[in-house]
Image 1 (tube, rainbow, N blue to C red):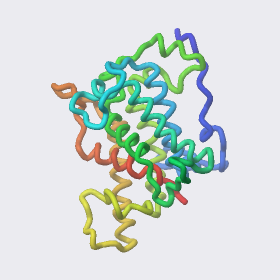
Image 2: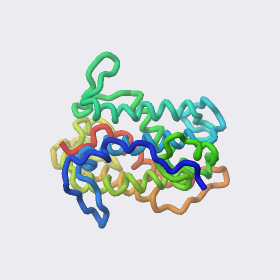
Image 3: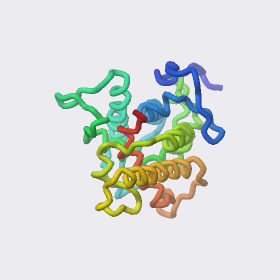
Amino acid sequence: MMKNKKRKKTPRYAQEQYWSTTMMVDDELVDRINVWEFYYFAAATIVPLLEDFIDVAEFKVEKGCPRVFYRLPEESVGAEDFSEMISNINLLVRYNSEGGLKYGGRDICFESGDRIAELTRALHLFANLVPYLNDRHFNMSVERYEDAPHGRHCSLDELRNLDKTIARRIFPTLQAFAALSVFAPRYFDNVYFGYPLPDLARTDDYSFYRHWNEVLESMVESWQWVLERKPKVTDGGWEDVPEKVFYGLHLFAEYLPEMQND
């Protein structure tokens, strides 16, 4: 029996009801504010779950080399790397809850295309790690899970399968955002585009809209794959993940700061 059944304080996005109405998307109930401010919903969902993960997971290294995985992620990314990644993703939570963000001595405006290198790297590291956030790669300490002073944001079994746990929470709202999104990010013409790359000579609004829809579809399909997949590990210990899934997850990482319906 667990020692602690209390849960940590619910994040603000789940406490406040900006609208009294909710939305049904493919039989899933989602809050409108989470769709309209999706970047905040996603960051405020990911951060506390990752905090629980690093508090419970047993790491093989304290400080690794996370930019390029020459070795398995559990041998390349340590506790310090996770903490730094979480801190940087949390900038999106601060940006929303504090009504803006000062970084490096200046005001940041994601809606205008401002970027923070640390945030971008953190989100892309997260994209690489998503399929590996489970007990096939990181052992979980039952004792540390039960010793949390204020409980956890999810069960131990959900932490052991954190890849699916995050996908289960992100996917329905991302699907709703994709269905309702009208405008591409303001800097969409500069990076990534769709898959495969479109004709760069086409810069009309319709082209942007069409390719933005393709990008959103790729994101949705990738998170759906993570949610529904049957885990398969190769002989070398790597997860068997299609390239297009990683591509969709990295599109999610690249465009998340501007994913809101404004």
